Length: 105
Image 1 (cartoon, rainbow, N blue to C red):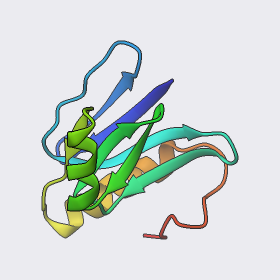
Image 2 (cartoon, rainbow, N blue to C red):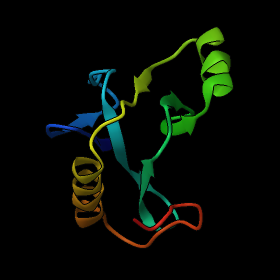
Image 3 (cartoon, rainbow, N blue to C red):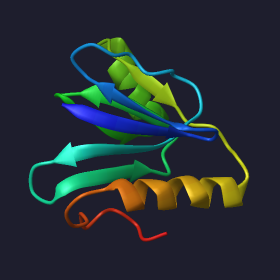
Image 4 (cartoon, rainbow, N blue to C red):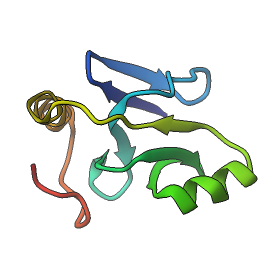
């Protein structure tokens, strides 16, 4: 499964079978989603790779995940315009529809 992680300076594409993305400054994750084609994860402090996909979690979700081991990407506060540009880039890159819990930016 290929997914993209958008950072404040660039976006990088990864394959979960072989790649480990940089953990710091993850702003948006674009990943395949069975029901609508793709989903955008954004606005979370932490993203963990659980059950074959990325999930956005709060601090307690991070603790839970770390206690059971795994891969974590950390978000970082950045300039609002840079963030909006990154989200727009992810939206332009996506396929399919939008999931109900994805917010419109």
